[in-house]
Amino acid sequence: MSKQIWKPGNMLYPLPVVLVSVAGKDGEKNVFTVAWTGTVCSDPPMVSISVRPQRYSYQMIKDTGEFVLNLTTEKLAYATDFCGVRSGRDLDKFKEMHLTAMPSEQVAAPYIEESPVNIECRVTECRELGVHHMFLAEVLCVHAEEAYLDQNGKFDLSKADPIVYSHGTYYTLGKPIGTFGYSVRKK
Image (tube, rainbow, N blue to C red; front, side, top):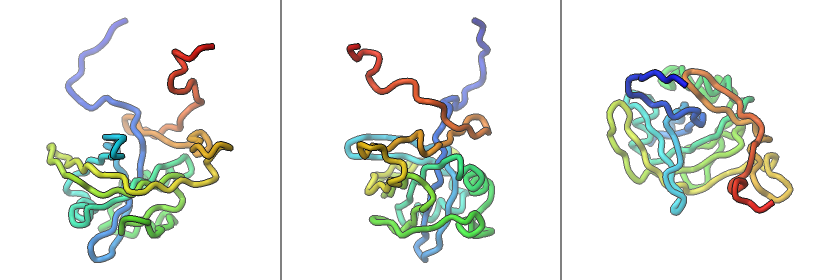
């Protein structure tokens, strides 16, 4: 096997594709994409998103300390891409992409009804890391679409057709190949 040496870069792929919905202090709302997102802690449940300060929604998050992560699906791929390349300074992306902004339970930012999972978050810290600032946030509430639950009430990701992102391309996820602990489970 032969490998090339590349300059340092973020090669942790694929990444979850999320739509982040926000509300400003004056009630304005926006939705945008974030590639730099992830789980930070399970107890208390925490996530992070990294946003460039130049982004339209950045100041809304700074001002309110709130946002909602909305998981994306194959059906939402076009809207997701659009919301990542167009600015909320110029147009209402909820209206343009026919996304339904629903009132959240714990935060002022709306959640997206068409998303299978919505994660309401409150910022606990903002770290200026370079071109991106990372918002660490506690998860306050999770909405899960009942259509994607299995007979045991567990969220069945395969029913939702989630998408991921890798080097400029969106992908659907494939078939399940095992469950946690299957390598050591007694047969």
